[in-house]
Amino acid sequence: MFKRLRGWFQADEQPATTPVVPESTTVPTAARTGGQGLLRRRMVLDARRRTVAYAISLRPLHHALDSINQAMRDDEILLHELAGQQEGAGPLKRPIWLELDWHSLGPSLLAQLPAGHPYTIVAHGIPALPGEQLLAQLAPLLGVVPVGLVVDKTSLNYPGLLRRMKLLALPVDTPDIAQFSRILARCRTLAPEADIWCVGLTSHEASEACLSLGANYVSGQLFTEELHQPIQLPLHFLRLNEALQLARRAAPFDDIADAIRVDPMLSVRLLRYVNSAGMGLSRQVTQLDQALILLGHTRIYRWLSLLLFASATPRPLDDTVLEAALTRGRLMELAGAVRLDAKDGEALFLIGLFSLLHFLLGAPREQLLQELHLPEAVHDTLAGQPTVYAPYLLLGEASELGQDPDPALLTQCGLNEYSFNRMQFEALSWALITLAS
Image (tube, rainbow, N blue to C red; front, side):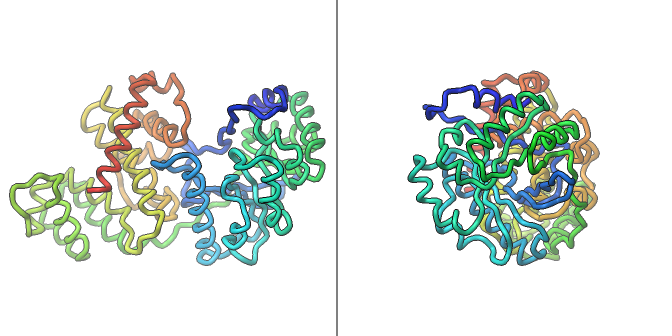
C-alpha cells in the first residue's frame, strides 16, 4: 500500500536536495474523461458515505511554460472558471476544497475566491519558501480559511507547518493495513489538528481499510459523480456542426457553401485561411465556392473542426485549450505514422482535437459525440472503447501530464522513449507555428 509514501516515511527527515512532487492520483484516462468542463470535481465522503465537500482542481492541460508559471496560470484559470460556475450554473451546495499550488498562496488569494461559500485550501507541489517564511506568508490565509496540504516527501520536512494544517491529503495505492496504520499515526503526530483525507481510492476494500484505521474522508474513482445533464450548445457550434456534417459526407460544395454563408464570419475566416501564407497560393481567392474547391472535403473538415474552438465570445483560456488540442492531435498523428496509414493519421488528429472540445464548451462528452456524428472508430475511441487508436490517445494524455509513458504502450505503437520525446517537441512546435500563422 502507498508505494510512494512508504519511501517517504522511511527517508531521512532532512530537506531533500531534489524534492519529489507526487503524481496526480486522479488522472483521467481515455476511458474515464467525462464532460465536466475545465474543472475536475471529486466527491469527498465521510465515514458514513455522505458527500461532505467537493474537491475542485483544474484538469491537466498542456502548456509551453516552465513548471512554476504553468502552475500559477493553471490556478488563475481554476479560480476564473470557479467564479463563472458560481455565478452562472449556481453555487455548489457543499463546501469546496480548492487544490492549489504553493506558489499561488498568499494574501491576494482571498480576494480571488468567490464570495459567500465555505472553502478549504489544499496546497500541493513544492513549497515556495523555507518553513518560517512560508508560515508568515500563509498567516493571512490561516486566520480566514482552513488550509491543508498533500502529504509527500517535501511537506514532511516542514513540521512547524504541518502542525498548523487542518487537512492532510494522503495519496493511496492499494490497501496494506500495517503500512497505513504507521503512516496515519505519523500524520497524527505531525499534524494533531488535521483531518486525514485519503485520495485516489480504487476499491471499496481500500476505502474500508482507510476509514477503519482512522481516516476522516475518502475519495476516488469508485465514487461516482452525479450525472451531468445535457446543456444548450452555443449557436456558433450548431452552425459549424451543420457544415461539418456536410463536409464529412462529401456533400456538393454548393451545399457546404450555403451552410457556411449562414454565418458571415465563417466565410471571412475561411477566405483568410485559404489566402494565408501557409497555403502558398499564387493569387488571392475571393469567392467562397472557389475556396472550397481548392481545399477539398478533407481539409474543409479539418478547418471547420478547428473553428469549433473559436468561440463567439472568446475567453482568456480559449487559446490554451486550442494549443493543447492541436498539440495532442498532432502528436497522435505523428505517432500513428509509424505503423498506421495516412487515413488513420487524419482520424488520430481528429481524436486528439475533439478529445478536448468538451472542456471548452463545458458540455458532457457524450452529448457532443451524439451531435458530431463522427466516424465510427473516432467516436468509439472518444467514448472509451478499446480501438486501434486508443493507445495513441493514452500517449497524448501521458505527454501532457508529464508522465513517462508505459514502455509496453510505446512498444504497442512502435515507438521508443527517444522517438516519442522527439515527436512531443515536433508536435508542440507545429502547434505554436499554426497558432501564430
